[in-house]
Image (tube, rainbow, N blue to C red; front, side, top):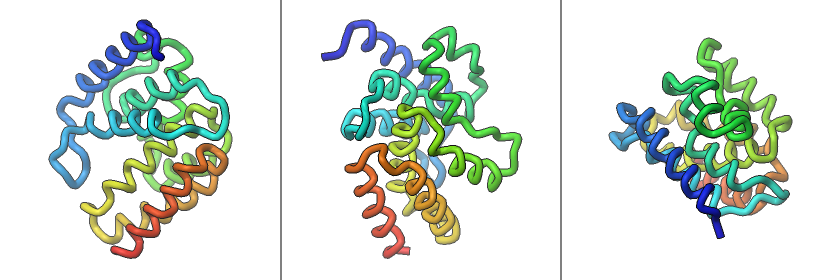
Length: 178
């Protein structure tokens, strides 16, 4: 099913991401941050995108998707270790932390339709995982995040119908509880 080369790269990515995120915790919980990228990668495996994509690239990018944004990992580090294609997807998913948060979010939502198919799929899996964890956050944060998620979902339509339907239901369920 998977090549030895892919499995080696996947393990390298898991170890790299675990090391880079080793001192980080998920917002609102004490869970090690690495749990999130691993769950995003699990969603990449569990759902099937509507269009043909490079699932191996999407899987590795899912594991690494927050390394440049949230650690001192550089683009050059990722290119050297995981190549141009994976790095390109990770960079598509990386927000510029020098920008005001609201502006970063707007830019991410606005540019979502223009991302590569792999980046769209990983972004949808990432947002799905984040919404699943929202219940531990404050009500104002939840409402804002759900509003952003609906707009992002609208711009990612046609990526993975099954996941889009689950995301809509999850958003509705969280809204009903808030």
